[in-house]
Image (cartoon, rainbow, N blue to C red; front, side):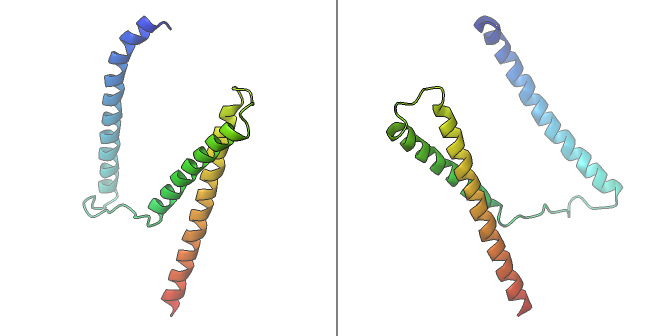
Length: 124
């Protein structure tokens, strides 16, 4: 596709896709409320389930990804400076995935420890 055609299609497709996204969200929300009414539930009293460790999980994931990006930049500029340009993005993606995964593992261990402490506190 050439740039002229793409330049014409972007102003058309972006508003259409945004409208479709908003329409889909509203449609699914209304459909969920109707399903709750059909089952005899009150949609006004339905509260979403609160995940107390969700913020911790996302924070550690993003911190790990940022640390992985930092480590990969340091590695590429110091150790792998004579490496081929085509293989350098592999180091970036690998380090981001590695440190992001480590962040999720740390989050899991902290969440597990917190739940164990809650169970011990409830027993006493």
